[in-house]
Length: 283
Ligand code: 13P
Image (cartoon, rainbow, N blue to C red):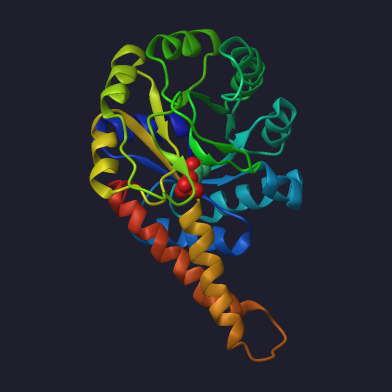
């Protein structure tokens, strides 16, 4: 079923769990994710990065995302992840997505604000949720740009100003998480997270879920994270299983059974995360 993200995030905050966002690439991993959400009775977000939207086309992504939400028995919010294009955000909104992330975190504060604000105006006039980002998420982003260094932390005063000046509904924060597999154990800066939460009272988002230690995930939720994004685990569960299945694939007319095991692997990966963030039973 279609759902309102603001309500889902508010319920998560009150219930001390997080809404989980999974990245998908096509119909099959989307199916695996939604199956996990239905079996676990969890509200869920399904997110496409711009490369996926460009490949399939905005109309197609808007169509399958909406169909997935409408045919599902749990709340599903289709989302555009990490768009640095204002035009793409507007385009997917016109094609039915109910939540977008406009990410200009690589730019100085003022430019970030000036890119995010028009998206918020456009989205809010249509009842759509907007996520912005301040600070940096480490690792490789979808454009293949690798972010590292030490100045990734979100500044508390800037966060307050950013929310005031842009009107974003939620904020992705840089507190030490990174996209892709971690090469060494990450250490989330929970103190900074608490400060941002206390100063802004905003709904906060943690990116780079794959590989984060469970105790740190729970600590982050306790200290103000309302939504967590997981992508790499979904992609790799899907493709490594598909690769194995392909080796033993016998000729037949349809690809249907070929994907069974890959879809099941995605469902199990998503199920684990739904339980970790405490979203099971919350639909
Ligand atoms: P991972 O790929 O590291 O799980 O991060 C996903 C993400 O943050 C998407 O926005």
